[in-house]
Length: 199
Image 1 (cartoon, one colour):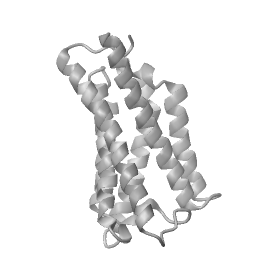
Image 2 (cartoon, one colour; image 1 turned 45 degrees about the horizontal axis):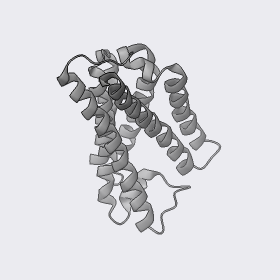
Image 3 (cartoon, helix red, strand yellow; image 1 turned 135 degrees about the horizontal axis):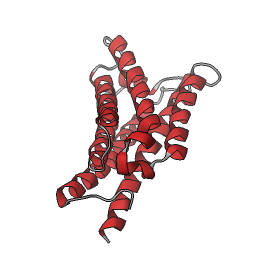
Image 4 (cartoon, rainbow, N blue to C red; image 1 turned 180 degrees about the vertical axis):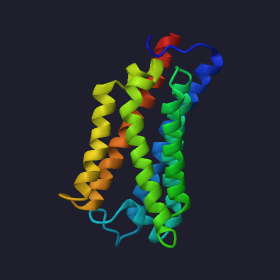
């Protein structure tokens, strides 16, 4: 198989990475959706998700951003077992660090750091998605150009729409959805490929 793994230790690392990716995405969704429910005056159409940090229980947004960081780190560790290049793995870890920084430095007194971290996180994540088919080693077949490039374009196009034709809240949520879906699809395919390979 294209995603075959050599060694029990590598197989375990791949599995843990895939699980971490799914759990990380789940963390983000649970926190954001919960805050949407408790912050009754929050307007998801015209406000950024980062603005949830300014409302009641806004401290929880740290765990939302940490969730994305965990998910990207999980993908990093999984594909490391499959011959992915250091360049691609570095981009994934860098994106994870930027998302984590966005959680550590929320909107408010640290708005400039937060905004810069978010922008850098999306840029590096999209670049990783674009390069994945050529730099992911044996994992490349699990997220080929048709998948990775489509989701990367979806992120970039959604960000552009949010700054022009649609409300910014909608644009950002679309961009985040494309990124999260790419992570989930890839994590599930990594997990499934391991189960088939072990059979």
